[in-house]
Image 1: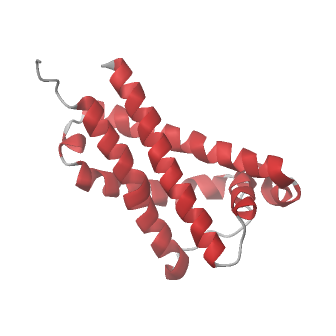
Image 2: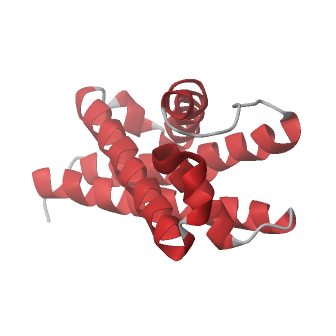
Length: 156
């Protein structure tokens, strides 16, 4: 069972993290920004404004930081689902709900506590798509992988 939980954390964190960062890169691109800029923006949580002077290494730090957070969020969901099986009984509901929780925690706690150099906003044109991304591209894959890992095994 422990291997299944670890697999759920790794696959859920990887899938959720990939969906979320690819959405963010696409959203930034629509607004004239490069993937490097977007990943440097992620790195501002650790480096502040200096991330924009850090080139590709800062962008790679942003990517590593993003996936570290994704795996931590996935681990939290799997741990909670292990204690509260109802979370994985309906992953199509619990995953998006978890995405809302992560979205709010990131915007209300994590970003303000970090070196992120911008005021956190809830403007509909940016926060709305980001919320949907967290619900369906981040939370849902994590919940689905947790449900798969924690499902009772049937004898063969």
